[in-house]
Length: 180
Image (tube, rainbow, N blue to C red; front, side, top):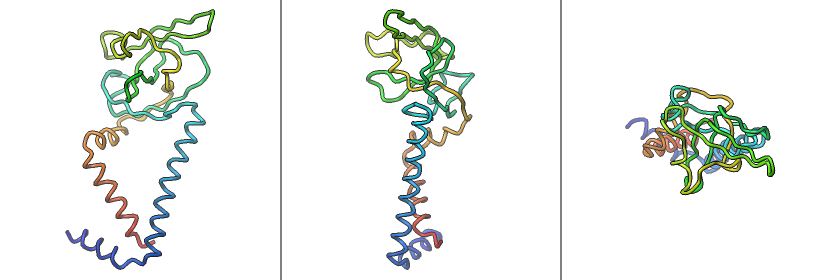
């Protein structure tokens, strides 16, 4: 409790100008993070250049908590590539491997079928009702790299929101009460 009391005393003794400076600094940090994210979106061509693997469906290649780096190029999608896709009616993207690709030569459109490496069957049960194939607009990007286990921070903060709020509150308090 001594640390909390000291922090509260520190806040009470701050001048308004110092508090405003700290709030502006915090705003600049948040803005910088957003600018970096938008820059990554432009460079990678993906609406979400970084995703976290949320299930064990891609084990042993990717485990729950791994972070994947995505890139979306104009190159044709090929069987064997690992893609991240959105399904109509679902918010959370899915990371799975392409197992079949059918290209329509008359229109140039591509039908894609995916499957998790650790799943028994293909993903048709995950697709929207009546949908048998994915189209290119469903694909968010191709996996081009990964960091193992780093995504657990995101998973824990999503599954246990109290930890997220405590962490944000502690960081905010630290920024406001810092003396520099």
